[in-house]
Amino acid sequence: RNENAQTIMTFTKIMREPGEIEIVLGNNLFLWAHGSGIDLAYHGDNMASFSLDLGNSQNNLPASVSLTEEEEEAAEEAEEAAEEAAEAAEEAADDAQDAAEDAAEEAEEAAEEAQEAAEEAEE
Image (cartoon, rainbow, N blue to C red):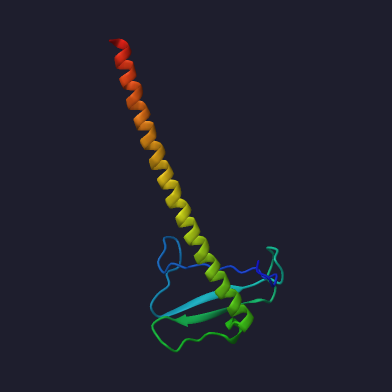
């Protein structure tokens, strides 16, 4: 949710996925719907379809898909937040990888020391 109490969902659709209808270079039919609140529920009349010709620069998008200035700003903010979260996650993953490598190195050194101590004890 953003500061305007709006829930914003973004996603990526891969053009060719197993078990899904392929998005083609040419005419594609898409569906959209939205609810009136933040709960997962039936969308009522807030739904429609639109065609999008990915092989043509003249697309047939309905006016109802256009965003208000506020929605565009919210979408930009959501995209920026997602990019920041992705960067933070990547940094955290790098830090975790470094820590794991350090721990593995320390464990290997401890194992070598234990092996040497065991060999000395046998003598």
